[in-house]
Length: 315
Image (cartoon, rainbow, N blue to C red; front, side):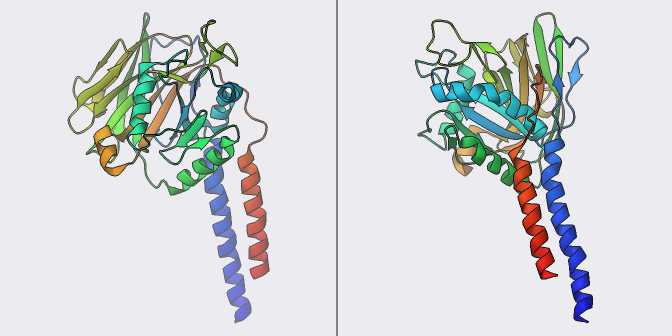
């Protein structure tokens, strides 16, 4: 009788182990849609139905030596993670940063509603979780991404269209299926890739910086009021936020647009939740070479070996 029970337990253990590994590996293969620069956008390109991406926010500056060391690798990091993450870099208005875009400062002030004293640079935050600061931060960031993926049980499904007419690019929401309606907003962010650092600026790194947030617009879902529009040609809500919220911006050689469903600042002040309900990115840039090795595989492989040994011992 005991032998029979052992035999029944073994397949169950194997099944649970393999399922866990499969769930953790699945996001690694998910690749974000990256449109090659030079591709025509005159007919419009629509993102895939997304929203599962996790928002990773970086605090950085053009004068920071450590930031300059990390920045060249961030595009590869973004590509290695595919659609698992949407990575945005905020350059502050600190009197020294060469960019200091008002849109980035607006996002920084949003973070300060919960964290008045922001950490040094470079710092990364995954879905409003604790900041990870310094050159070795990415190990903890990877762990935060995995933890958040396991914890997230549901997300807002989002889709938007990107179309170019002359020198103007328009991004328009085309699908919304979400939750957290009261106290939430839809946010468009425009990121510039390979943004040149002025020659006169303090610059310990390369001639350009990547994923620089340069423009944003926010629409409150419950009222369909356009509450924020920074550095855009236009932002509008003809019907309501979830139907036709749109932004216009001047065409860039290489850019990304991120659409977020997140809490309003007023809502954050009461619940201190800086995370998102959903995020999806459209990228118009060269795809960097994929990383030949991802540390996640080591974690998963180690977990698999330990798990197999434990199940074998119990059996």
